[in-house]
Amino acid sequence: MAEKKDTKAAASEQQEEVQDGLRNANMMTDKAVVAAMEDIEKGKDDKKKLEAKIQICVATYDNRKKVLMKRKRKAEDKLEKYGLEQTHALLERYLGVKCEIKDGELVPTKTKIDEKERLTAVEHKRELKKLNEEMRKKESEIDDEYRKGVEELRNSYEAEYRWYLNDW
Picture 1 (cartoon, helix red, strand yellow):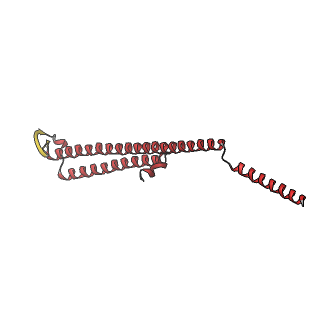
Picture 2: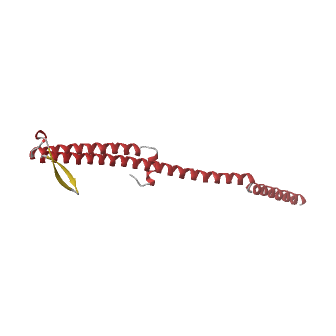
């Protein structure tokens, strides 16, 4: 019987040692805590790095898009100015005198247009039609240039973050 008690005690002691070993193995170590803190800091840095990357790409994309839009507007303004100058010149050729625009009204001057330069009503309409066709072609070229620029921009790395601006 004593042997049975000794074997039971030995088995019990052995079981306690295994449980203590498992418990000790499950205890938090200083090394694990330090590693966890380093991971947390690395995670924070990664998040900040990602946010900075997004903001830089968004700002770059937005800036480039605005430059393209400004370039287009500038070209359109230049074309509009050209159109105004040409229609004014055609009107003067039709009227036969130089004109000035004062307070939004056309005021003829005393300077005459050379007879060779003058236009009839039919010629004036024909020249206006040509001018309008020329203007439409130039507008189309401006739009094509803008579309090419936007296509290149949308194919850039920064465009991957355009969702941030909701820009399509």
